[in-house]
Image (cartoon, rainbow, N blue to C red):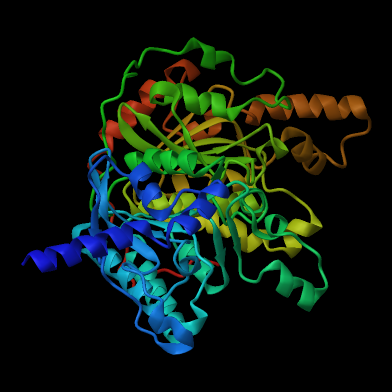
Length: 510
């Protein structure tokens, strides 16, 4: 018995040492935490329960039989974040460069299966050189098994990927299928083929950072949802997100006591929208003023800045916010904004998170580039996402809602539950100037005629009352009461049920 315990403790010690002091020091020298340090930072103190600490790889080719480490190159298990159960895997770069072996993949698949059984989120911390070449196809099969688990878990439990080192080749596709991806500035990279291969094939000279760094993936490709300064900051942001999300698709939107529960009027909102309809304003100000503690978790902040998406609480309840940003491209919908918002709406719908949409949109962005790159199909993604969503949907039109963009942005016609407008709302097919040029093209003889007709059109149509008279707007509300009206609507819609026709799955335009 004592001999077994001694062996047990020896194995545990070996597992905790990872690839040894020299490799751990090298990891620290790069400004990176080790796999276990990351788990300790992420989870509540003393909550981590490790699985498969004694698992080793099973290959003997290329001298690998002499190089074995307890736990192999990934640490897996369960723990809690602010008391909420989560499952986690953390790849250990100090052991074979975090490369994925058959045993490594089996460990990940096991905790994903456990998470699915009990309905708990999965957090994957990626820091790996990719497939373990010495294992050949067995390693590739391991990736395939992980990918299949990602697909089965999609829409059932939240999946979050944290990229904290290299993530290349086939390895990138597992994070790509998860719900959120976070990266660390300067130390994390994602690409299908690295700079050397790119240079060989296309003759392009590019650095790792330019090709697949955090800045690239948060501002250009939209692969990543956020990037932070270091490992610790990134993990704390993940903790914040987990705190906002339900554990699975059977839970309702979380209601948590917050400090700020005041529903009294906010008179500053009465002057948020400028008198000049062409003057921009910051929609983020509106969002922060209607949520608890002004604490907004923005997603993809640096990509498609003409669209804002993210999470906040209203009276303690987690809400997903989607909003046009007039400060960027006048809030127009373009390809990137449509894709960004569509994916966010679908996530919220998967996990029963109510949606609040703030609308100030003059239309879809015109241009050859937009048309040739598929604005039709990409704009349809957002329309489709709102139309299929069955969660509570509350919409507030603050100013412009023109043309097809009015319909797309969670209108009554897409099963919107509560649709409000501010007195400054303009709901029309298009702006007054463009409408006049079409309607009166044969009657306008000079600039004065144009101005007169534009003023007449504005007075008649650039207001919320025509839409209200048709029942497309439920009420025209004072801006100061927006938070209270949202809170009331959320309470009223708490037990909303809406069924859709039976289908195997939908066929959203991809």
